[in-house]
Length: 571
Image 1 (spheres, rainbow, N blue to C red):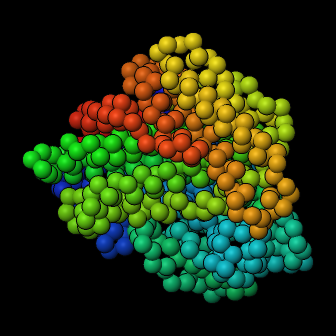
Image 2 (cartoon, rainbow, N blue to C red):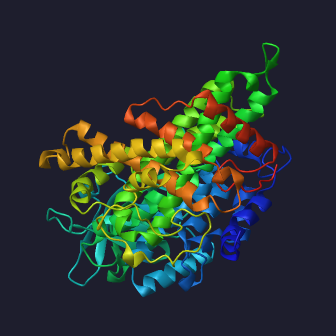
Image 3 (cartoon, rainbow, N blue to C red):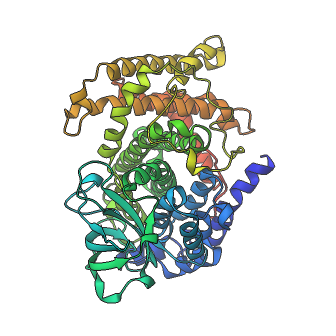
């Protein structure tokens, strides 16, 4: 590993060390303590103190403002150490603040950035107030009002619901209607600190009970003619939708990437179960169907990691395409994680829903993962944001597949994260979608990689079909309320994009010194699994399933992560 990569991994490794062995029942921040706290609708207090002492808030603050945020893939790795133990801790303590802060880093004034940086570096929290239950993901329909007055002040009126940490946060980013005119310029974002508000002009609403993320304080807040100064406006009046869409490109990439270790913990729990359970004179792990199911879940985790890691690095290297890639990443990764956990629950049988005992962490992780599937944007909303961009991408000059050098190289250097380079819509050729065709050609004469080249060719053909279907979309197909089957086009595009990410990940890491990543086996397995989205099955044949299962066992025995990096883990 080069020096830059080592620096990028330091934070995650330090957090893993501090959290210790999660399977040790005496560990105050282990699985047993986490499950017990979840039963009380809490997170482990010792775990929050651990993150306080680490200074997790600095991970969300750009380096130029005194924090550690310089590259998105590093932030993802650090947060994975938290989500691996307790997704509710990851979301409630940290990721919810990151969702809010990105709006300020990308659109706020220097003074707003400075104030928010100081709050987060001091251990404070900031909440994002987007949701109103009546409007869901329809930002343009939001009714919460911030009415401008002649003196420049605004008056807040209305309520926001299902907000993480609304009571605990010292500050809020509030998405508000600032004009009654129709169109995208009728809303703005406000950065408000509670200490500046009159206490009698707002009140908290009851907490919303939830099946997953029970330790996250999901509440509401209601304002009644509450005054805020003009300095609260993030960017300009009427810029709220634009600011939100820019920030979504980062958060829709980062949050699913942070959540991939939920499947790691699910796999590790299932392995502990099948390796200890006796059936038919042997271990459950000897059964062919069990081995295939776990091999496929392991492969799906690698797919999700390849897609999310490449997506995170693309924010730095391909910012003009992030508007297209980010929502596709959110849709595919969250769905694949949930599907894999559901299949593992079948292997666990009745044990998957037990809320006490050695394997109880599985049911908690399974429930928490469902929230990641929608978070601040439902999967169908992600597809809906990709759909209208596809015809334009198809009409532009086709990409050559010449992606930036080391686009998918784990831990490789990156230019600084520049929020100003994020565009509202994708521009230029779609180089990732062209990767399968390029790789199919490059691998055609390579005997060792002939099968990988064949699979790449299948996705190259699928990319052409998606392109043709995108060009055939009518204006009514792209409109809100258009036919549901039009969303199949972006869903298929996401599968092509995922195949491209797996191919670039194999290509960019094959000379990195890890024999597993250099072997085309895992990439062949990954593309085989993705074929399920093209109507070609997707199940791993024995010749791929068995060696993937053996690789999973080797990782488990060596106490290494099941993701692409395979970092050593406590316990």
